[in-house]
Amino acid sequence: MARVLAWTVEFLQAFFLVVDDLIDESITRRGQPCWYKLEHVGLISCNDAILLDQENYHILKLFFSDKPYYQKLVDLMHEVSCTRYTAIGQSMDMASNPPNKRPQFHVFTQLRYDSIVKYKTAFYSFVLPVRLALYMSSFNSEEDHKIAEEILLKIGHLFQVQDDYLDCFGDPAIIGKIGTDIEEGKCSWLIVTAFQMCDKQQREFIETNYGIKDGDCVRRVKEFYNKLNLKDVFHKEEEKQYKEINVLIDNLKAKSQLSPKIFTEFLNRIYKRKK
Image 1 (cartoon, rainbow, N blue to C red):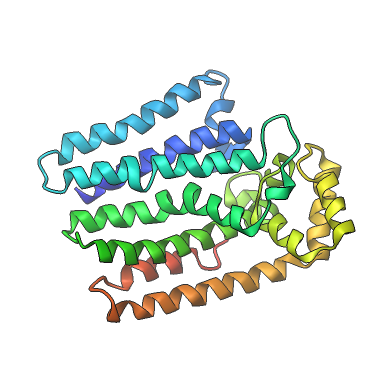
Image 2: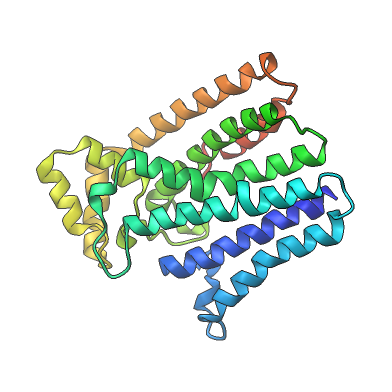
């Protein structure tokens, strides 16, 4: 039953990725062409995404409707942690970089970035699967769920910072996709951090070249990132966040009956990841 429940998360993930790739005009995903890029698919991918999303609730009804925690699973899937929150995060992401316009650089702030990551990635990727499992295991305490959510949101934030870094500096052969954040004008950790480090003239240089689908512009931005030594800045940030999350996990014993292993396995799986 746990595996069946896990498949609902996979269907949800597939739904989000199909839509996200279409919106971002991405090229590859997991080493293969994005679904909408296939000749026989195109905009049919919009309907396919809806089918994937709705299958979650079909699976929940088929296998869990007789369980005492069924309604909690449905509420969590539908409202609290995934579809609603992720749509909010996607909206903030798109508002930062509206179609057919230049990126809205004035909103490329740490607060905006943190909010996008929280709602677009961390909830459905990390909070959702663990909280579903907690309900299935009869952990119904609101306090336990709140504690778990706090730790998992921070793990999700670290994951997205890593993702932004790998989009620019990762090897496409390893990560399974071609990074496009720079030409797409994404509000990523790299540009938000660069804006915090550079002066007015340097910022103007980035804004001139960022969000333009031109190889020379992308190269200039990457060269400037290297000039700011953002690789080292990233590795220090990764280490800092890793230590902060471990402190929260170590403090679990005094607050909750939740097993630290739940969180350490997630954290150690992503720490210093290459893809």
